Image (cartoon, rainbow, N blue to C red):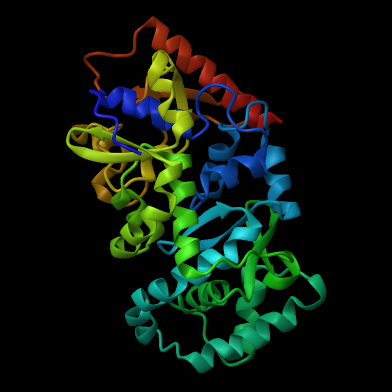
Length: 367
């Protein structure tokens, strides 16, 4: 499709992203549907990831998202960027088939330092699969003990790297929750049905799904997000561009779904929307260039010192305008906004909107 050469402000671009991500209007119909629609949701911080799903599913409670993980209708693993994500179970194996080799290659230097060779991984695979045989689940500590008993040290992060390699090879997968941790299970026992597109078809599908769930976004955004080389991403675009619309913004092409682009016809909603998003949320993190929604002068307030730890974000009208935090514990805990601009705090309407967002978060935690 031809590019829409229309003048669109950054705030409108941000609201289009809110719409794509199910953060405006009716959201998604359920927990698995939200995860599937987003293609994958960052889940390094489990508690943040639970709310990242909940905020996209009206009426969902914490127990609903936890149940999806316990039942395996949503899974959590390391499909890209060496970072944990939530995704649909049928998608994990084929995405790993695309991304694993590059991630393992990127970790090769560290694995040499830890003296991890192919034979070591095979020893750990045998020990781990023996421990989880018959549908049993094992904690990380139990797996580490099995590795040690098989002669494989686990100190200095060696154990977690061995465990990561077993998940990358689809031998193990994080399964049911045990408090705020996950136990590990045999991949083939937990995920009994996997799709198997070829590499080129798979990259094209993942590109399409990312742009539908994150657009407007660039090909570079997707290449960073997916850990897939930009040359392969560009090669995949012709297969799916007929199902997308290209929007030109400040001289750069951004891709999005036709249904999201159609919102431009009548005015993109959400001008007065106020959201309390978790840390590491895809709305902020899911792009290599975040300047459309996060003013560069405030980026350090979301990721202090560039340390990779994303704070909880307040989003008003499609733009990140502050952070928020819980103060206290239990039922008496308060949700406190911290606007970026101390000299120009939120007005009455924004504060009222934030209170509603905080109340929704409280209902999510309680149900």
